[in-house]
Length: 477
Ligand code: NAD
Image 1 (spheres, helix red, strand yellow):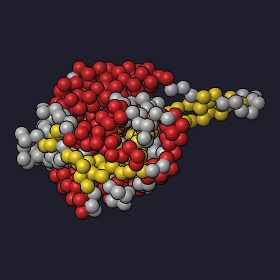
Image 2 (cartoon, rainbow, N blue to C red):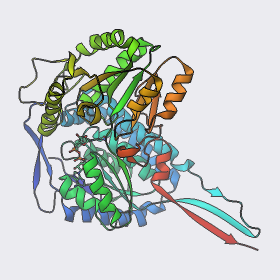
Image 3 (spheres, rainbow, N blue to C red):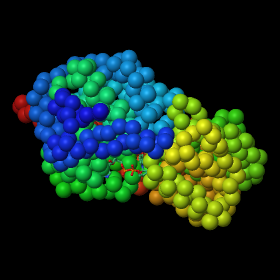
Image 4 (tube, rainbow, N blue to C red):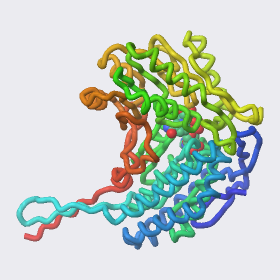
């Protein structure tokens, strides 16, 4: 049975209570995890504090980096076991899970090799003064992780925090946390001192709420829903704790009439179906210039109709959704689309061999004739793509920016002027030109604007987010 990792030891919840973990593949309980609560979180934060101010502080940047690189290698050595855990827990196709584990390893490699490249500054100042700006860890960092990409998210969040010398307390999602526990175990094997990488499992409203409200954390990073993100930020604000939020998205593809269809069509279809649409950056809106709308959408329909949904072992385009509530929510949106008068242009197929009790939904491509529907304004978090025509560049930009979200966008055009102008006008954190998604994007600064959140992860900028500066001003005459 999976256990939490607190202060370097595998442990059950103090209460002794467990939570059932349901498999999305067939809706059956397949394991149990400890139901950690306030007291467990408190133990983990205390262990992290002692580590951050004790043994971990003595490690040089080079030594921290080497441990992270060793952890990356251990992840690669155990990649198949981790991939199987991830696929079983989340329901995703086994090849996607394998890819996620490679990306997780890459995070620890990237930040491990960057740890000793973070330099301070010497600032010119008044005569007689020397000024150094040095980087320091924040202390105890809290990481609240969602269920859609547990392995990638823990790598993205924990690797830069550890590289900068922080000690972490991770609260993974109750729906999918097995790979997170396993990587913390591997962290100990790689040489992380006890208390540096803690994992407390449990319910969001119990363990997650206790962690974000804990008075002795110095930073919290949260990925998940807007509603909970706001709660986490409020709780952190009670103790003036810095917060990075990575919330939802409603990313738009903007397709101009000179599009390279060979590049665009497969990327657009993959961009919504990856992880069954349960991706914050999912390209869920397809804006197409009116004069090519019919010919372009026909190509998308062809590609979309080939989509197959199945179990992880079937290794098809999509797996099931994570749980019953997500399944009900996506089905409600499908009904709403029909009620709002949107027309279904194409659907994928669920493999007849999947268990009837699993959470499989049919990938669906709608077309709308205006942008008013909830299906175009709200994050669905499922394999649902909605297409809409636009006339001018100006209108395309206005529609792309119309939602409350601002995470990612894509511009499809061969015209350099359009590419640059539209990319610059997009209100979001990342814009692709003639592409969408590229590997894990570990090296690329990432995050949202508007209701998609604030703060940045990935890339070298995460090292700044997860550390602070100290300015030393020396008057030497
Ligand atoms: P959620 O926000 O409820 O859960 C995300 C994480 O927060 C989990 O670890 C959960 O245990 C924790 N949590 C829940 N309540 C908490 C609380 N009160 N205090 C602190 N932590 C808490 O997300 P969900 O219910 O699993 O999914 C709902 C919606 O969230 C999805 O439909 C989707 O729109 C969005 N979502 C977005 C992302 C993303 O990558 N941006 C990921 C997952 C979910």
